[in-house]
Length: 377
Ligand SMILES: Cc1ncc(COP(=O)(O)O)c(C=O)c1O
Image (cartoon, rainbow, N blue to C red; front, side, top):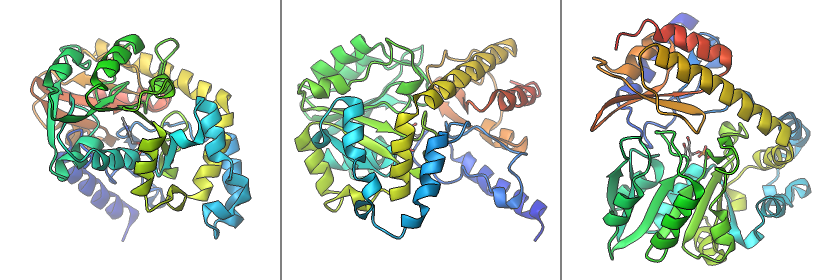
């Protein structure tokens, strides 16, 4: 079969997947790879999954190649990676007992939804789908509170949605798909109150794209002994390791113990030794992270302004993606953009249709804007 035919088949499959695109766990599933073996690496703009387009830190690449000959061993049999948990604990100022390493943070969110398996869950709408969708699957009532008109978490309404049966609150800050953030003091005050009644999971996947002082983590609440605050982090975004699957949870030691027990006793079995070694190297490379952050900010500023010039009103983004209303767009935006070789997300919310585009490199965003010039909305 020719490459051309493979490519069309693949696009068609993706388009079908895109038809179901809301910002749910299902939509964030496996359709987002580029079949490079089919030679279509360059034709497609893959702006659908909030990945980091700048690649692994050089040290992380080197670490993987150096350790490749130990891949026949379980992670705990590879001396070079024994200290990962210790190093991660040092980086975040917690103890190893406060940490659970997971195969991507999606796995942590899934575990947490199953851990809080009673009462109801309060979260936002829209939000990142994995945790609420798992909760729904196991029969938990999910109370979805609309974001406010600026697409920011409506904390007052979320507090109101909580009752005596609320066991869990999930907040993604900065938020996906809306790209907005809550000021640390505001989020902290909410967490303080909410955690008196329920477990509060704060998903900080995009926190590294924020500047100080907005990048203050809720990890400080765990450190000061709040047993109901759980923070979830990932190596997929600023560390550019989405395909390597490393995430982690920081929470009270008893919560970590309970989560660990559901991970057939030892999460070392679940996370690969090469990804762990890459993560260790990446942690040390602050310059690479800073460079990714700066390039992302430049691409984001360009894209925001260019979308405005085209008459869209994008939400000011605190992340590596932009969320924008699609005005009077008539069709299925994600599907139509796929026809133009762009992978992105779109969804229908109570206030209309919205698009979410991840930041690629500046060159990719310039190509994206050229394509957007042909869109009638
Ligand atoms: C808010 C948020 N949390 C968690 C994840 C999952 O990331 P991973 O499983 O790659 O760590 C994502 C992925 O896009 C996300 O947007």
